[in-house]
Length: 250
Image: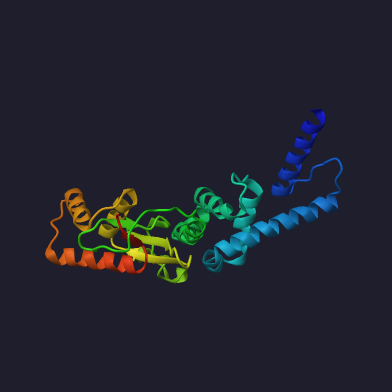
């Protein structure tokens, strides 16, 4: 037990040194060796974040990016053991700890979220859902692709070059990210607030377009004209083509 306790103690010392770079006398190690180890781990973290967030890295200066990654690396103890989930912890860390950068780039949080969602949707576990390809878009209940996420943004980071985004672009944006069940490719689509709410409802269970329209009208107290009904049907036809809607309830 004493051996186990001491081993855990040394592991914690090595972990702390790896993050902070503060020298520690760890039995059985050489300073030169653990310094190389720390550099190696940092490079893995930096490479992983650079791969996950190419647009954010391109936006920032080299010093801003390096300082942000170093701040994260030295002060954040990762919760998940999975390397692919680390960029999400980085996103949360930036939101909570990089106020100066977020003031300079108020859309940075949205940009990081946009880039993270692509990873999250790609890595989603496959979920089996029951549906039929035979049905009527106008009258049958629609089955939503379970590999999709609806996100709200304040800036159009998914459609505009980051360096061209200004305060005048701040508004309400909704983006639907989904993974094609056949190709596994991740695709993005901006959706209007009305359609965003309907997608939320479909995430709970299958609805017909008529049920979705009535539910939205009741909630929003907006009268749905025939023109709007036509647009709603056209939207879901497009979703069916893109396999955002997989098919119809059996």
